[in-house]
Length: 182
Image (cartoon, rainbow, N blue to C red; front, side, top):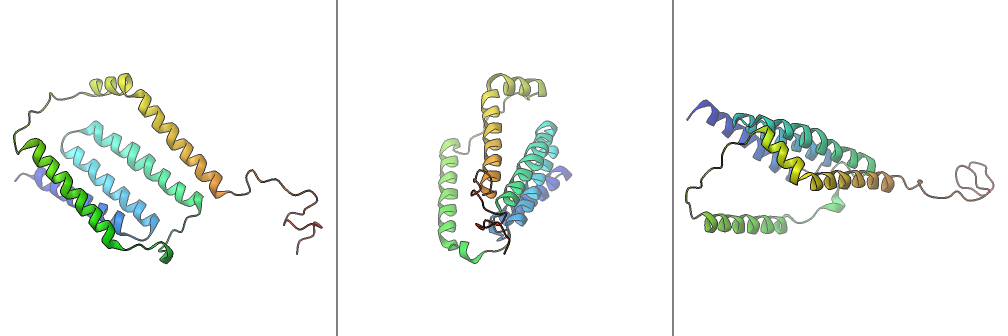
């Protein structure tokens, strides 16, 4: 076992552990920070595998943009940040669905490949990757950016109920009819 293998296993363990903490923590902001650790470990794994472009795209887009968007959405919607007793659900249903999904995907993987060797395609270059993204995947990429922008604008509108509401004629700043603050 080489040093790269040990580093890859360590980064994988960090990513799996942080991913487990993301879905098991009861604090939403901590879940976002655990997600940063998980995605950062995944970027480190890409670096060990000599896929530098994918690693930096991972850092810039997922760690830099998506997690920041998630944290801003949490702050703008005034969602409960800490543990909330009224949102607790029984864990057995999630374990059943997760276990069933994992088992189904495992059966699908074994059935699809039958433990046979798969030929690897030729190594990609940044030029080929850029050509594919900007030739055939530019529309989904732009649609995703519009969707994320709409989600952020929606979060701002939902979090600010006074936007769009009309003041009552003759009402004071606190909404009282005679204009004096009580």
